[in-house]
Image 1 (cartoon, rainbow, N blue to C red):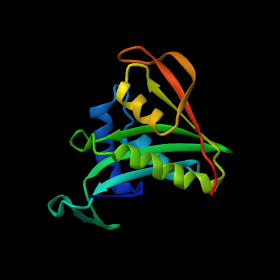
Image 2: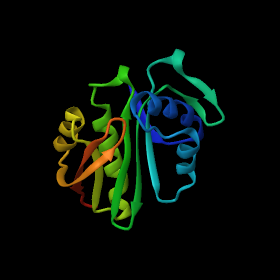
Image 3: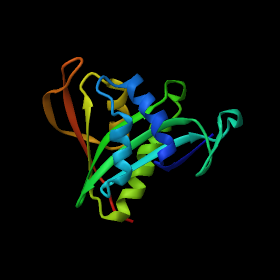
Image 4: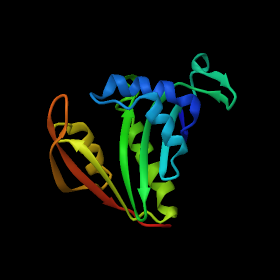
Length: 162
């Protein structure tokens, strides 16, 4: 069981740890913390609700272990997804899909019409997720990723305001 909430300060260390474990060019705590002050940013976090032992008390209430997150920045009618990540133990349970759908639901009323993202050309699981959500390839960025050097597919989805 999990709940999806907006990014808060207490999430930053866990997200930075997930970033370091999952990505070759991870965001650090300072960069993630900067997103809290960015009026163009929307980051959502999935927290474990079912594990009472993992929950801690913070100044922001009880919190669970971070299971995954998605981050975006919006400019006018377009949003760019910056990162999507699910903790290894929480993968293959529909969590990334739920985070993406919640992000879309929160962006649409703000006038966002398109969401764009880059994904490693070799990341078949992520590509299948995005295509299953209605994203289509609109471009290619040669050599976009490092460690290892790899092309990025540019995917985009049109969303409709409620």
